[in-house]
Image (cartoon, rainbow, N blue to C red; front, side, top):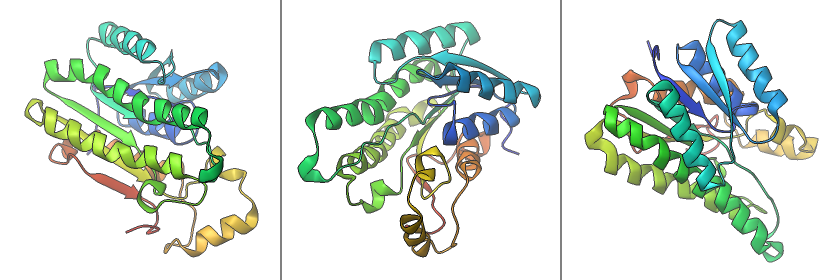
Length: 248
């Protein structure tokens, strides 16, 4: 069940955290995974090595999702090399926190370019081969903050909320070509982005998670693997929330 044998999957921001977990989950299900990264080649190489050591297939691809020309060139190259792209997990994203009154235009533009325009550019490029092959799975990575909002994250929450509209529009555009588009919205997940939080803040967060525990990157990756599968072919335009009940 949920096998991806013969599928080609591209995961942006795939060298660490949730992205790496997604790469490993897709590879475990049989996909050949392209691990995207921007600067940390060592982390990307480690992700590829781990997948290959476990018997999977993976390769690296360096490009900045915030650069639309680079996205087009990289995705086209991957598609030509493998003959297709079946799955896109648009996971790459950044967080720049700050109260609204202190929000800088540069930070707002950077967040929007990477988190929203980057996801759109990747989906646009990958959808070309998906349309031709009449099969595709597009998964955009949002956040529970896109549902709830959060103090000091006005711009970040806006970008994550915007991805829902993006996915639902893509879902309607490409439904006739058997291409689905969905969103995964993680809650409080144990990654590099959360390890730096102070203990008091962590304790407060856990009080609003009904399951009473921090999620794992693998929990999010499992949701992505399902949405990438043949079995999820009748699921499109949806938000799959992996948050322990933090928002429901």
